[in-house]
Amino acid sequence: MFSLIGVLITSCEVDDFLNPEPETAVSGSGFYKSDEDVLAGIYGIYDALQGVNENTETSNSSFNRGIQFEYLLTEHRSDNTRSATLEGSRADFHRYLTDDNNIQSEDYWQSMYEIIFRANSIISVVGVADASNVARYTAEAKFLRAYAYFNLIRLYGSDDDTIGGIPLVTAVAEADDDEVLFTRVPKSEVYEQIVEDLLEAIDNLDNSFKARASKAAAQGILAKVYLSQPIPNYSGARQLCEAIMADGSFALQGDFRDVFYNEMNSEIIFAIRYEFGDPNESQGFSSEFTSFSRQGRQDGLNIVNPNLVAAFEANGGNRTSVSYFAFGDPTSPSVEVTKFLPDGSDITTDPATPTYGASSRQAGNDWIVLRYADVLLMHVEAILRDGGAVATADASALNSFNAVRNRAGLANDADATITTDELLLERRVELAFENQRFFDLLRFGVANIVLSAHSAADNDEDITVYPAYNARALLLPIPSREINLSKGLLKQNPR
Image (cartoon, rainbow, N blue to C red; front, side, top):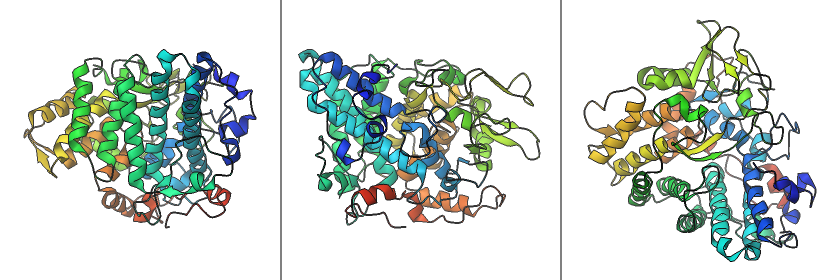
């Protein structure tokens, strides 16, 4: 999909281009001379978001993985999933032992800033494009910049303004501009920029694409931003969700499985595309979700926690069989994610010997960033939480809530009211393994309560010990590499 990026990569060293240090973050403005060049640069931003398949380039550090490590920073740090073993830096996430030298966290930080740097570069040269495309290209770059900042501020940004959120870089940086590159600005300022970028995207994009920025994608991400920012804008979030719902371009799939295996379907609003078997366009995270019959390079990641299994048993409906499967010994099974089984997978014929196709490490499963069910549940959330309510009988909220439940084969909510606990449970089973749970807990203000209880649970000490959890673990440490590059200007999060 992003083959044009090859044109750009030839202009500089690949490693530097993918993970620039400040001196390489300066725009190569001499390269961009035409509309075609700018469009190639736009594709390059998506390429940074898509990332590099770890099974193609096995370097453990300083190699852009894009969103391919995101489940470690989100699902593993929620009560949803864990690593199959306690070995290696990946196992640190589910035990809240992630330190400032963690390779995966460092790569994620660099990947998101690579998206930002590429977006800033395109914005600075977009004037050479055809006049009819300038506003659209700018909006597309700003949408991607906003999405990267939204991820970073939620994972690394402190609420304490004496520490600051994260560095906010909105223009091409000079090589020695340490103040811009490494000064943490207040969290509220970062959110203001995110909102500004997404509003511009809404004004200048349409719904022509699902694998590129669109008006609906900007509306949906902005709705989530409004729900997440320090002072939530619930009415604004509701209006945005209702605009997507009224547009008529999106609908729930009738079969939950089709959401993930009938790609680019009516439910998808924004997804990151991958292509099976192509070492430059495939992803490797799907194979890492296998453990019983290991297909990845690790012993098994995103292994499903027992309390999530219990949540599915109570409220999963027909989503359960699509979402996970218990392999092996029934008394001690390996409960594994099946939402994103690598292409060619078959666990139905003989679960004792599941098949994963000829090249499971080069999977083509798209990564879904935003889908219509999420919008419906955000619509409920905006109504429920507006004014601090703990339950609502609002007819439109009930319609949205029941639409998601009914697709799962469940009856309408029995008492015609929705509580925050019911909504969190519904979001948990509907969006399990889609990197939403951790952010949901933060947004609803219950992360410390839920994760403290989860960490204290009597789990198998060989697998799920959580010895280091405390409220500060909700914030990832700034990678030490960045602290060192800043010569101490970039301050660390409290630990």
